[in-house]
Length: 560
Image 1 (cartoon, helix red, strand yellow):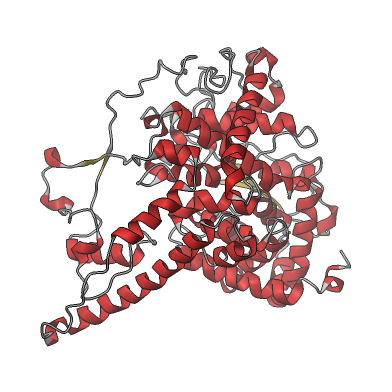
Image 2 (cartoon, rainbow, N blue to C red):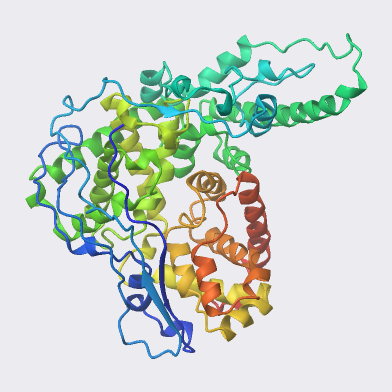
């Protein structure tokens, strides 16, 4: 896997405290503060873009020298007695355009040559304990199990040897698994559903043997634990079967699909369910494949037109900002450091920007592409998308992933475009409503924030602009978006308001013990690294309760 050098680090703080009212802040005050500042912003690329379509023309690259990281102070116009403003970048921050040059011809890259895989590292020294935990966390990937629990029968992979017992020269490197039916899946995503139907019919339940052998007292606790795991897996498998039945109909019932999706969509079925929930693909099955082929062809034409004149034909202001932001997208994640992934992201963002001149490209939109790309990539592989090198896929499949991600991003942004037009009025409106809502559901917290001089715009602007994607992982975001898509087209603006409010109140006890600087530092780097789907579901449940109580009480929001 060819990878770019590490992008600038994430931590950023742009803070100005004052006693002025929230409404007195303009987008100039806070929108720019939350953006990234680095020496690389003033650098320009020199390499020309090769002309052609997304397959025949890679996005522009350059090899400018690295500019040392520096601290960028805020403007001196702030008269507040409290001021904290810094922007940190990686000590060895590269030029955003310093990743290796890309060939103008798709056949020239080293696709097909040997690539280094990733070393399998054990987290525990007990294989049985690790396998049991994997069984508990497995997501809907096996059929219902009946009878005595056999951990080996629940996994296709054999038990692994603890790392401490393996000589360094004998460590196994994992080979990414690509589904053998990738061409069928590309032409018809419903093939994924058909695969599960075949598997369900071909796999018969194992006969129960629990009554054939007496169970010793020493194994009674293990038996009870295994029985609990079987019940949980059975419930999940039943949900998956309901999804398969819903998606297999000649015309999908969107109300039924939304009802099922609210509690989460099986990972393997998201590439089918998300386009339907977003309205990217039609509900009748017989129209779906033709629509998919037409939309992918249309995107290919858009890319060809946008990049036909090379770098000189691009909107330089838009391209310069995209070129800066792409290497900063999900830093440290192998998938997003691959050159092929970064080129896809550049094309998606640039084509969207020139098609929406009212907003153009705005920082934060790059983050919103990542869930779509990972979900569509997962349709073609049997491994973790974030650890996968997309260059292992054929060019036509990678192009299909890129096109599908573009159209789904477009559908999402259509509902929240006022977040990104001039002055970003949608974000200002949402942050104002959030401040009023928190004042009613947690008055003590609201009073403490006010007493410390903390303005909601200082932290909530990013929550609204990036839909909390810089506060939680992509996997957590994907689970959250299952519910957003189930809620309907307004969820990314309306329901998200209640999610952000519940998210802030979750940390209420800790925040009330902190001063201004502690509050801002804490909210800029929240302890969500270990969050699981369960944590996200608790947050969504709290948001649902707030939405049920307050959504129709518009008089409490000043009639807005």
